[in-house]
Length: 212
Image (tube, rainbow, N blue to C red; front, side, top):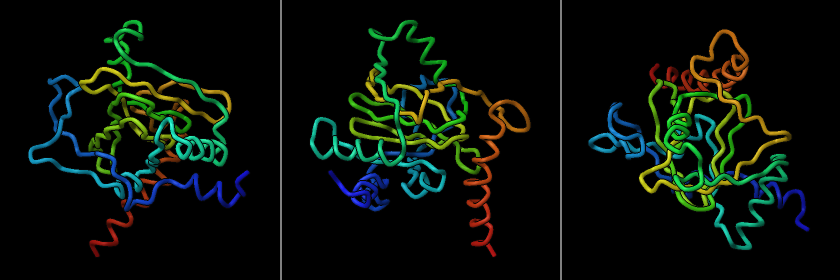
């Protein structure tokens, strides 16, 4: 059995210099199918550092390997992910597929982290940055992504139209989305306020200090 320090090290998010996730700032096209890439011209990449500043965490966990299994087990143990299930999103497996995909694409927050481990297939997670711009994250097989509580986000499949992903959760799962706006009042307001306080305000303060 691995020591607590070894488990903690294995569960750390991948170092920024080794992260090879594909992410970019989206175009403003609201007409074209949401499953298309929606890259700007020229492409405007978003770095691993920019995602980390927004609280987005990333691990590469190769499925079906001893190393991947040990890494996933360490992440679950250290971060307290006690619940796990698998979702298979594709036209053949998901009832009312087109309607569900449009529902997933509504901008929303959760009152807990959103954790997804892609077993096969691929899809897009979109997150808002501090300037309210959309960043599109292309998640593929072996990607484990954690979105922080309170971040505005949405999900869609890509043009492959299929993803199989494990959903992880601390304790009893709560899947309820809270559509934007979530500021001021309502069930999700404390989560949104927490996110702004812990991530967006420090980020904006650092940017302001750099201008001085």
